Length: 193
Image (cartoon, rainbow, N blue to C red; front, side, top):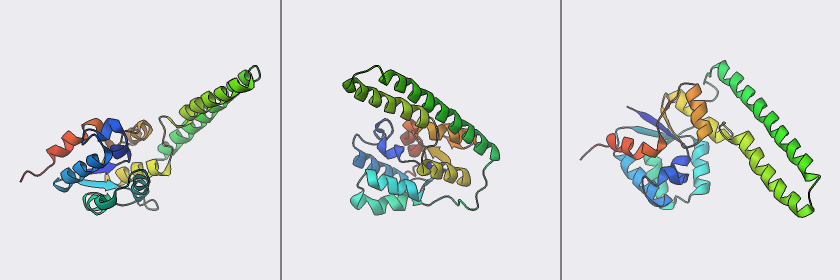
């Protein structure tokens, strides 16, 4: 039986959730309906489920969602990950910190030549570039790490629209699907009655 490990982006990224329905709540309802009639199993780490509940009010859908999706954290204390993963992650973080510092230095030099009003715009530009340099394409939260570890532990299929999570999942050999085709894949696992 296939196991799918879900990230919040399945329900919060419009490029992903609109395959189920135009609005988020309707998308979740349709997902739950399909998942509950599926031969596949669906998992979501507890931290990701808590994050989802902060972003979307599930209300009366909560019990149905919890029946369709197993809420469970990875076994962090028992799970072995390849040391190479840690080496690559540390190298990536170091590279990004250095890149962020260079961006900050460039903007600091430019700020000395600007009016106070222009400095405010420059700071906003700096924040955007700095955020992109440090966070795009990398695991940048405990929720991302929980999804990655749970998919690794279960040898499950990761479903996420997060580029960084997908990149690092691929590095450790986790199966991936294009999240934009998730509904079609889910329908292929649906038991016809």
